Image (tube, rainbow, N blue to C red; front, side, top):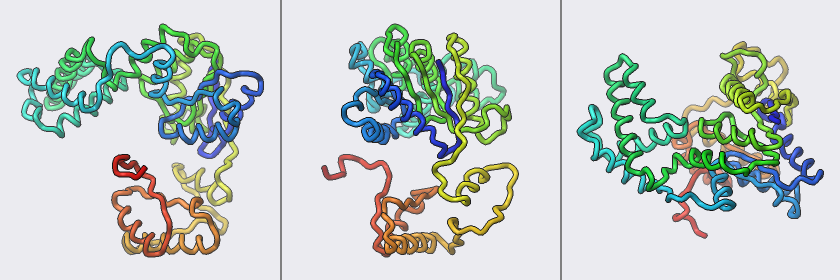
Length: 370
């Protein structure tokens, strides 16, 4: 059975999932699968350990869609073909470009450009994640009345076709891992009898939908959370219209597989906003009709800075005051729209005001001490 849990940010969707997992384990289930985005895996595992304890945490398998491939391989064996690394993929694409350069109408002068190869890798990955084939791109090139766009689509289709032919029966492209995983899962019973939870996604790409299709056809119960409170209003211009469209796709998949669908569970209480001002801001910030907050504000402050230096100094001095008031540094967060623009000045201001900080960004492991 498919069960959809909806609610705005902070409404307790993840807590609902984890409490449901704990309840199922109390009732004797020991083969539960939790699927979360890759960046949330560590947080989810830590939360599972805290909630379930060491004796029960192994009863829940926590994976992302890509890690799911590793779990299946551990149980049933690896793919018969090697998976191309990023470097090998770039080399093979370069070889494909050289092989078909006489057929190219627009990109023939760019095939020796490293930036072009890197850009094409991204295009290829996007195509595969959306299950778009070279034939689809070629058809699109015939159906557009814009000559330059038609030439671009033609060349993309040609290069993709030659590249696919080069690696056929020799390698698996990493962008097609989920496609191969889907084909493999169709012949296995990996999800049979399991309760599957999917949490933390705003939507899914075509490859992920195909895997969810297999999950729905095999699993006992499937719980999926979405950040929306307006699925039933039918407004295609709603703030959560993209999320709502993903729910509709899932219902269509369930109907196709003859899966029972439970009425959606909509969580309304906000557990994250600890005062009326933040609650009002969360509900009205992106609304079409703006209404002013009539009460006095004490928890939201606006500061009009002269420049970035003034802005960063004000933030650092404010944090310094909080630290002197015994506020824990880990309870303070600074969020920037463009970290590249603010990073150096923020770091300077933090040092200037003796503010300890952690910069949450991807770093090269080879440059970090072990």
